[in-house]
Image 1: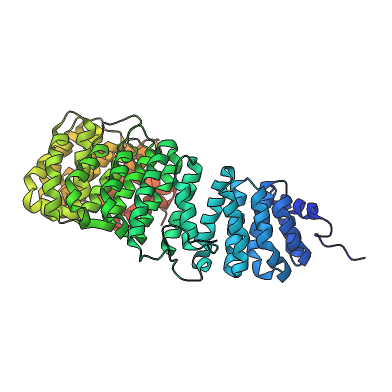
Image 2: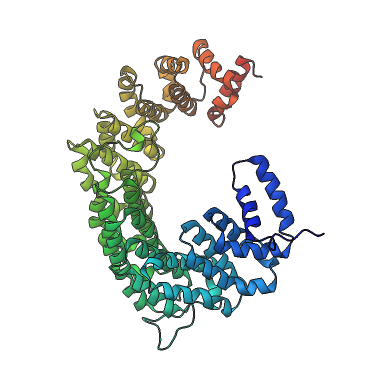
Length: 556
């Protein structure tokens, strides 16, 4: 007697099989995978997966069923394909799990790509119905966003969408430009909850590449609504607000002309968020990153706003040193800080604007923080020099050499370690343009660095910058520097050995010949015995040193 198919055995048998695939048991997973591979050859199994979209108890199983159906969409029988759009809508109506709805949305998008207009009708009716039920609206908008992102032009007959301010009389076609814009613009307004507003902004961002760009007045009218919605969302939910800021970069990419008359308002919102110390760092960095994207996109269009823009950037750049400290000031910390996100704006400005125009406005603004009593301001001034070095280095050397060297001298001699570290970063960035002028400065401060109790990563970072600035002049300092490196290499602390090896790498960059005395060579060789990978950093600049250490240790 032939065994019944899994579908005829009822969905629970298939549900149990999928459940076994989710268990943390490697042997069980292998067995379940083999059984599923055989079962998928049975047409009834595909019908069973469709049932599980709605009836499986565990959301992980419902999610897996949606994924399997999407992957085998072209192998489904025609009858199931025709019913699947409605089955997906029924599953969406019942499911409240975000991950499941995402998978169902992806499945629906694939159906929209594969089918004709009749496949669009069920999902559009469901989305329209959700607009009348606030508890369903957020989920519907997120599904809509997935469909727009994945199905793209297929929703609109492979042509840009013609749009107007409101849908025409009668019932607009499913996924028509007027209907979608009317739905999304209505969802931006208060008193919709943050989830709805964030989802509407996300869907609108996905829609932007598909909308025709001929109605510039419409886009200009849309920008104030987007900015107002963003401002309210940022006040109510920082996490959703940070994600929703992406729409500004999407507008910059696809409809930059719409922002031309709203640049100050948009940048003002981002600078206000980026400078607010009461907000989370992730949100502040995201907002300041949007300013950087605007600079890169609009460039010279920002010249009339430059003085105002720079004052806004200097707020987070020169803010007081806080608790916790900036990531680069704390060993082991990761991630960008608002201070460095502000410096990246200056980097972008230096790349996009004429150097003389930027320096004329920026340098006077930096004088106060560079000489002030606030260590954060002094650090910010040093980071500003580092940021503009790439775009303005030549102009700084030709017209502002003495002030720049004076600022670096003040930074390297600052009592605050964070300021000295920022000055070292500026020296490194300026080295290509000012190398002959930096060597005397490095020689002036190297004795101080070597004479202090510097065991922190910042101290090593400053040492490296000074050695690189000295160039071949570093040879004269080997008797003082190498014992420091040797002591750190012989210590048991792994981080200290890593920093010492990095300093040795800086010496190798500077010196054409780097003879190591036997005690230092032995200390480095001890690392090679732990594995040649410890010395890989030396290979690009000092292959001879690398191989001599390997030979010394007997590795080769």
